[in-house]
Image (cartoon, rainbow over all chains, first blue to last red; front, side):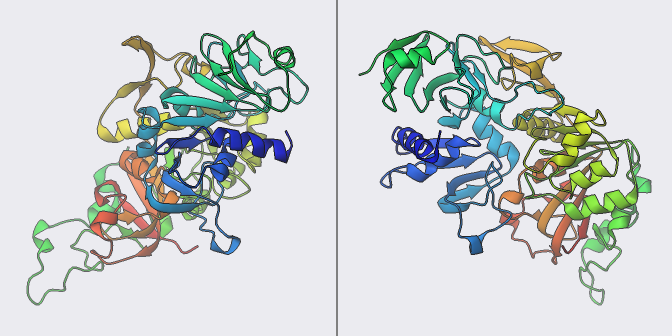
Length: 213
Length: 255
């Protein structure tokens, strides 16, 4: 995806967030979503390192090195924010208090399995961070990802090939080509980027059902 | 592993009667050896008893909350064959990365060892020179919390059905699978605060709080690096993020 496509995807996800949602934004693409949420609703962002009410990045001359997000980037706090420790943060995450975890992924399977933490590279350390906590604990797990890998392989699959982050947790997938619900298989709710259903199916590794409202 | 007699903090702490200053006696003051005083003038003294093979929990998420001064002093102190419990495995050449580069770390217990700039850990890992126990971030926190709270273990849905649960007991409650995780009680905890006092109360700043409070509570011996030491009462009780009961030693390190 180029910058315009990433922005378009972030805008599309942002349009589905509602007033009062507590949302954890994962590392990577999800971080863009905060930039596009409508100004007339309150969406409250949680950062796993211990912040609720995360705001936009600060001006360069107003950076506090001890105020960072999950991606280790400097952030600001909005009015109404709170600061807490790791165990309180993971009580929120593991205890079902987060409405939506927006995560990136390598692969999603038609049964909702999520793979987003390791590609089994030999000699490179795996890194899981809070991904398994979020995947197992959030009320809803939504994935944002490029529909295919950089060499054109599908990421929507019958079964994940990489080790799982959690089994059967993903309820919705947003890609550059479609919005897809996971409900006893992949259900296409929206086609994006001018793609036809036939083309989308050809770029997916599992059967798709078309159900556009 | 540490007897109370071997701990110089214990040697100066005292006579409960001295806690009410009598007329003519110096008022409560950090310099009064009769009163509880966890402040160490020297970081070297605060780290004197860390043995080879110790397990040390080190606070921080990214660079925020990392007690860099204590890690530098640990490198100088020389303990080796260490197990380090921390969220990350260091980046650049500082902090935990420097400790690894000095060949002091046998094993990392962490959630996210591969961050931008984690070159030292990645090099040691690729060369098979360091062990890695990878755990979900919340599981590290909860294992420490259990250790601090006297809970020997707990079941969590996090990681169930994944390769990180292999070899761990799994049990089904109400139709969902949970993984048994054991409590973690590190020999030492290194934490960072903005401000501390002689009772060991610490106030952190912003997202530097992260693992500090739970590591402080879990560590058998907790050492807090602070930027400033204030008189008792100088920290608003509502703002204390690590109550003094959890903190054994306080060292001011200007960085």
